[in-house]
Amino acid sequence: MKVNRPRPFSKSIVSKIGLIMTFITLMVLGLSVSSYIMQERVNRDVERTTRHEIPSAIITMQMLRAASDMNASMLKYVMGRHESLAVFLENQQDFENWLEELQAIKPDAQQQLTRISQLYERFQRIAHQKVLTEFDPIAEQWARKQLMRLSIDVARPMDNLIAELKAAQELKQPDNLAVLQYLDQLIDENGDMLTELNQYLEGRASSRQFFMEDMATFEQYLSLAEFELNDPASLRKIAQLSNHFTSLKRSGIAIFNNYQPSAKVAAMEAVRTLSDHEYHALENALSTFAQGTGNEVTRSMTDLQSILHSNQLNLGYLLLFILFVSSAMYFYIYQSFTQPLPHWQILCSDSLPVT
Image (cartoon, rainbow, N blue to C red; front, side, top):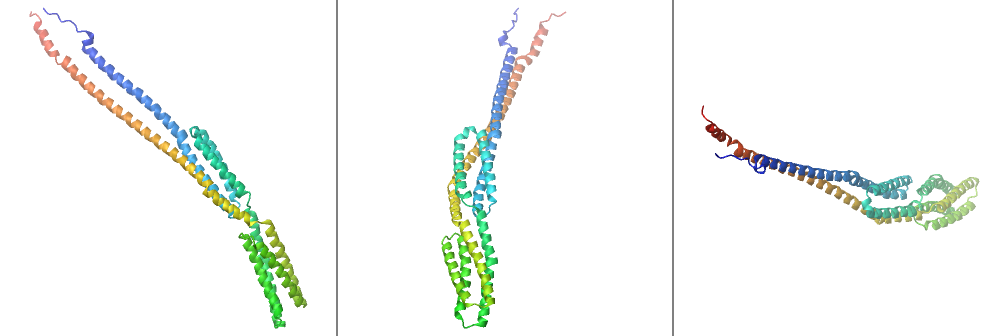
């Protein structure tokens, strides 16, 4: 009689099933380790993006806006708006604070930030030296107010007095053409002095010399008119006219002495040069840095999407493989164990003795 010996464990179905389960367990463990590594990388990328790249991009845009506001404030300042100085200084402080913060969160970009810092230092230094400290719009405002006051309170009354003298002279002595000529000349010189003051404020330096010449001519014709007009009424008007002229002369000289329009011309030229060179270079450096930071954020987001997509694919492949192995194992068990079981039971029943 043939004796059935037990199979070695290595060839038994249990060992094969155990080997397959061990293999599946190792694959799941490997996927878990891979997922953990990917998750750690995702966490690092997300942390770097949220703590460094995105704040850097936001700060750089704020710095661009502050630099633009400083440049615009300088132009408004030289155009006569003194309050723009406070706006410039406020944006200057903001820019410096943001630059310091950017240097703290982007230590790997020190070379670019050093370049930006150098361009900014040059921009603000020239702005202070050639614009903000060389030109004072308050002095210009004072000069223009003085000119307006002279036009309304002095020059116009002078024209009225001269017109009254001329009207009285035409009634009394219409044939005295010399006096009428003197009075017409006084009207012309009065208007010329006011014109020269206005042109001086617009930047024509020669207007000061022309004003002095007009002033001397006015005094000359005023003396001639006073000599010809010797009646009490005319002399009173001449005295009033002389007082107004003294006020015009003193105020005009004060304008020449206290306000230099050449400073405004130089400041305007400095603003134009700053905008074309220093500000343009600073703006380009900030824009390049912002673009690089934005590209870094985009690249990081793309990498994160790629990692997540790869992880999902790996998980799907593993699930398919487990399904395949489970099906193969089920088929193997069925073929090797379940299906031969009825035949084995029949053989056993046949070998039993009949009682």
